[in-house]
Image 1 (spheres, rainbow, N blue to C red):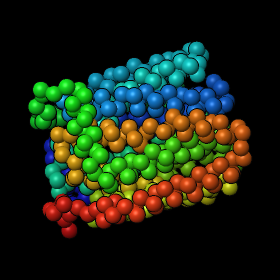
Image 2 (cartoon, rainbow, N blue to C red):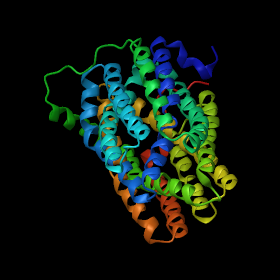
Image 3 (cartoon, helix red, strand yellow):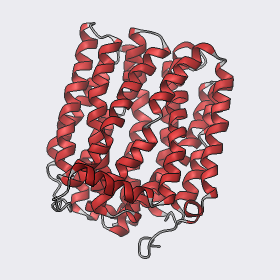
Length: 408
């Protein structure tokens, strides 16, 4: 088997990969479907920011508990249970849209439930991969998952743009729910060892242990602190302002926005192919440089949101983001003990996500009270500056790979 697909030698990872691929394919249209479902009800950026903030706040509230549970219980079972909740919430959204009874508060409430479910899935996902893939296959395993994610990002938004424009966002949500129905029995084929958690500790003792593992790693909390601000900018400027401009600026349009998001996926896709074969020896150094590239599409979105130019900028940003994504996963999985990985991941996610609701609300307000070009260009400069400043920390700049983890 070629080196790039070496992770498929691990049987457990093969089943997990299949289940994850199904959900990523089915869910690739969800963000665009939800965004335009809200704008269809109320063409106001503040309404969209409210629904996105509802999801994120709920996710943040439950993240730490999700990390503790994922270190205590079988991680595959946790993921399956949360998929059932997701089927119900997304199915309810689709039903409301089909019947014409959907309201912004109702979509926000269902987003709260969906966000809580995701808070348990994400730490379990992070902790399950090192259990399924051998250490020498970790980079390939993460790159393969990113490959599917980016491949679906390419096609999903284009299809979503067409479906939403022609048939409405509810049908995209139906496809998403069907994907989760299929993924549940596939995930049941994954066989994991019993959780390493030995019991005998309380929930809060487990949280303290996770906090100790988090705060004693300087590289970890520095990058998380940077992403606290960077993610707030990203979700506000790209997630709120982007669809709003697409809805109201003929230079871009809904279908054009789908092409732009897909171009970002192409950048990710090509970079995953590179990372499946070539080792990432300095995961955080190159990762943070790659993240700084997101300033390019932010600036273009503000100055001249034409489809082709913006798609090229998004392509470059996608490639840079994938370098960070794979590098960050490697840094976490290779430097944090497996028995606490889900808890540490939940602290990572909490810190990274906590300011996102603020970002959605601030940008929802800014777009109605300020010049859009000034807001987006300033956001791009700030984003790149924060990303590059993390390289001043030696443990971020110098981090390498454990002996035996990098093969040639």
